Image (cartoon, rainbow, N blue to C red; front, side, top):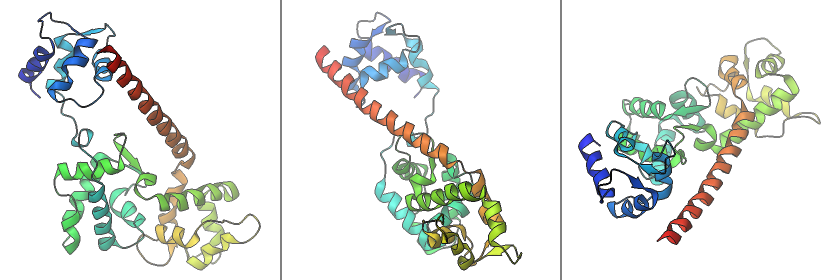
Length: 277
């Protein structure tokens, strides 16, 4: 938007030329202009000073704001599925390898919108045949991103990209913390020959005993073996020690509550708007 279009927008809702737009007036005038969201809620967001009316100044930031594409595009679920199929063809299964080698190279277990965009561009530079299903424009990338980032948080966690890997690695992280204190300590215990590497057979020892790990050890091993060497080094596993799975769980609970509240609030707003007409 530019300043002229902001002026036109304000004039369109301020048809009595009073210089002020009240909530009922705003809720009535905005939908015919093409806005499909909850107009009363939008009014509350624009009325940052809580005055109960809007003036032109409340709209002016829209002339300078350049929102990211993912904030206003539709989720492309089909594009996301094709993206995952393409990167599996390029890098192999499990898809967590793509997460670690291409998307989350720092091991934070979450990625931002910008990291995803840059990762797509890196993949596109690969001379492979599966690139037709990789989003090429920012608009295409935004649709795929929104299929994962449903609440427009600006980031996604492993849970949203690969639920199976999240479950396997999350349970492994929690179990290790409880019984060994850290991944590093567990690695030293399992590496009894001191060669700095552990195999799937060595890792499988964690299933023994009454307090043994009950999760999917082969999947955990396959996820961590990002270079397909059939051996794990401490460098490949130590990043898990900095992963706060407990915070991930708490944050997910909060987001679900916020989503539920948002749906309830939107329904209430819709009823209020209908009653006011």
